[in-house]
Amino acid sequence: MADEELLPTNTTGYKVGAKKTAAELAQLDAQDESLRKWKESLGLGAAGAASNDPRNVVVLALAMEVVGREDVILDLSTPDALGRLKDQSICIKEGIEYRLKVKFRINHDVVSGLKYIQIVKRGGIRVDRMEEMLGSYGPNTAPYEKKFMVEEAPSGMLARGHYNVKSGFVDDDGHTHLEWNWAFDIKKDWE
Image 1 (tube, rainbow, N blue to C red):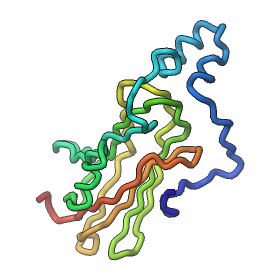
Image 2 (image 1 turned 30 degrees about the vertical axis):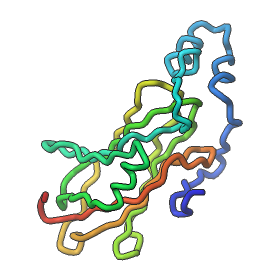
Image 3 (image 1 turned 90 degrees about the vertical axis):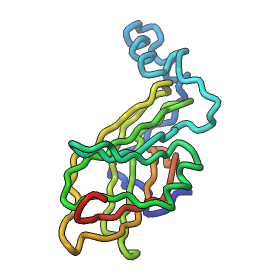
C-alpha cells in the first residue's frame, strides 16, 4: 500500500479503461498488418520482454542532469541499492538549473499512466510535491528513459539546508511499483 502522500491526483471525468494483458492487446485488430507491426514495435507481439524478474516495472535509476557536470545518479535497481540511499545525501548547488530523468524497464505487461511522485520535506514540513506523468509503455528488453522539464533549485540563505524526500512510481491502476526515501542538501556550492 502506497503512502497516502504518494497517491496520484485524479482528473475529474477521466476513467481508466479495463485492464488488458499484452497478449489481449496484440490480438486486437490482428488482421491489420500495419497495426500488428506497430504493436510489435511497442513490445506487444510475440517478441515482448521475457524476464525472470517478477516485477512488471523495474526502475533502474533516477538522475539529476546539470549542463556542464556529470549526472548525479541514484541507483534504484535493487533493494540493496535502495537501502544505501537512506544513508547518503546528495549535494545540490543553490540556483542551478537541472533536469530529472528516469530510466526504467517494463517486463511482462503493458503499464498504463505511469507517474513519478515526489514529496519534499524540510524539518518535517512539506515544502514541495511533484507529480510527473511518464506515460504508458509496453514490455521491452531495452530500458526506457524519460526526461522531465528543466527546473531551478531554490537559492538564498533560507533555502540552504537538508531536505528529506519520499518518491514513488504509481500507475493508473493504482499499483505502486516502487517507493523509497532519500535526501539532498542545498548548499552554496558543489561539495
